[in-house]
Image (cartoon, rainbow, N blue to C red; front, side, top):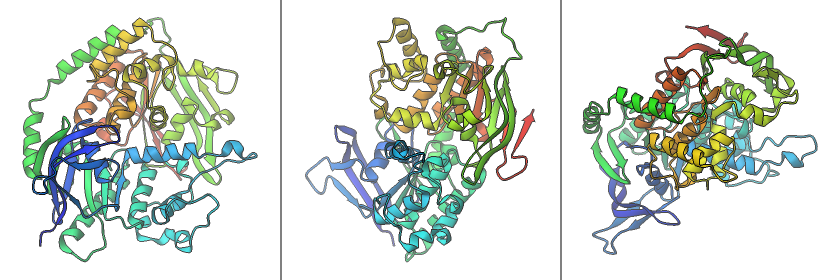
Length: 524
């Protein structure tokens, strides 16, 4: 028997300031499995936030027959997303009391406490957890998400994938009736992706065959249509702040295959990217440079906390022009490895890590280091979200000055260059928009443009395509290929997605946690 779970007819979506989606109509029935998709900034994120109660559905007509909003999931919706994970890290930073502890470190909320809060509500640091929370290790949701080993680790010490798996476990333990999984496969290793695919398929099957089950309903929200799971039955697509498709999956896939064949020629896109780089790059390749120059060097590096060792006896060099891919399972130390280079991990100072010929901790200025690095990372994304009032032009210009936000008036040259990069990224005419008002994917695209604007000697890319739709992903990967061809910048790239590996990345650092040795170097 069909049952309508959500009914939206002639409604708009509003945030605290304005209408963000002027009109939409959509319904979800109990025997349907929905995917919500669409380009960055198209309205998908607004719809998802409204479902979760973070924005409002407002009826466009006072007549009940002309305008309807009904949801059987009110106050029982949980979003598992990159954006939600970023908010958690923001909260942990804001509540960090390490500066007030005599020689100690505030690890913040552990995974166990965070999951317990999903049931109990916010807890004080002094509150004792109930017995059931102390025994979470054996809970089926914890085992399904594979987080038994990290339950007592601070959230701030978890990888992005580990935080999102903790979010999913929290939603399952708290028995929310509707889960919105937003871009759930981004940044996950193969094992974690399989766990999530199997979980989704199992839940959908239970909902369609067992009306008495205790499982939540799920709405999947994704950036890339080619990854749609087989269990999806219907697709809702947003574009230009309105619904651009609503119907069965097979019809949608047919439509997308026809559109892809008519996309802009890749060579034309490459030509536009090349012209932009050559016309705006402030640095030129010096033919007299030493091609054997060692840019980064690590000798017998060891990093960990407590009994947990992340990097063990790591020896590695980054030479100019050698572009590296870094890979390994979630929690293997990839982000920690990059943060030793950027200086965001303080254990760099008790290790032999050398940047541009100088050992860290021997008197070098952090600004001398930063001016030679371009960075795209989850940490940077979180930091920029915390000062989200920066407009897009100033955000690009801040890449020249290595600052989070812009302090001081921009020069005419900086402004002209920033506007060209905005146009390249598809943000022409939007220079006065604020970073905080963009979708997560648009924010990530802006941070990539910021990282390359000064043609840095080393470009560090930690899952740069997180949250990017198909079009942006193609543009960014082409852009990175072209930057490699310029010869000025050497790239260090972390990704779990083998389709995002660049042709120039012939050197691979592969991390193998709990093995000896814990890493392998591959040259192809």
